[in-house]
Amino acid sequence: MDQLDRQLLDLLTHNARMPVKEIAARVSLTSPAVSSRIRRLEQTGVIGGYTVVISAPESPRTVHALISVSVAPEDRDEFLADVAAEPQVNQCFHVTGSHSYIVKVACEGMQALEHLISRYQRSGPTSTQIILSTPVDRNHPGAARPFSEPAQ
Image 1: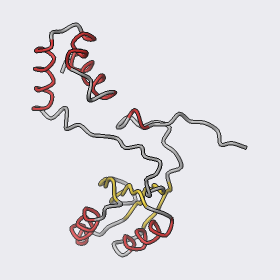
Image 2 (image 1 turned 180 degrees about the vertical axis):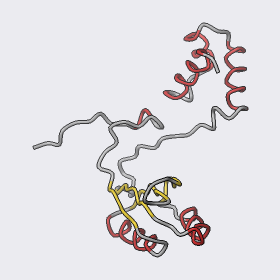
Image 3 (image 1 turned 60 degrees about the horizontal axis):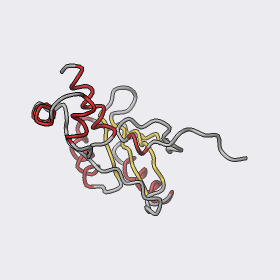
Image 4 (image 1 turned 120 degrees about the vertical axis):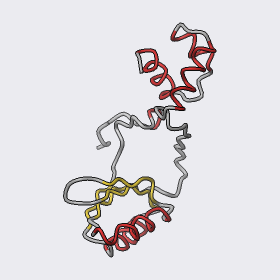
């Protein structure tokens, strides 16, 4: 991967729908050359996919949290099946440290979050952090909100 590939990735990260013609103009290449490079980045797995970031304030899922769970090795398959089947789960990370997994969730309210935590406590001890804001979000650049002090 060279500097041009990094420029392409940067442009696509900020706007995955940017037309190839516009990308080509910005990096001083022909459209076929840009298309070829993007195809190669996709085929080698550097570009793992494209997504849509929905920022709908009317979404019923207003409570976002990280649930850390310590899961015994013999319970991992059952736990992961439960996590994969749960629509409130956005991501699950297998991590080092005092917990086995960190599960990122978006719940419809505190009661739904409490229910999810109780369910995961059957797999082992948990620790939960409620997400207050996302001042930096490199996975979804348009979704990040600039940090500001709360109104007094």
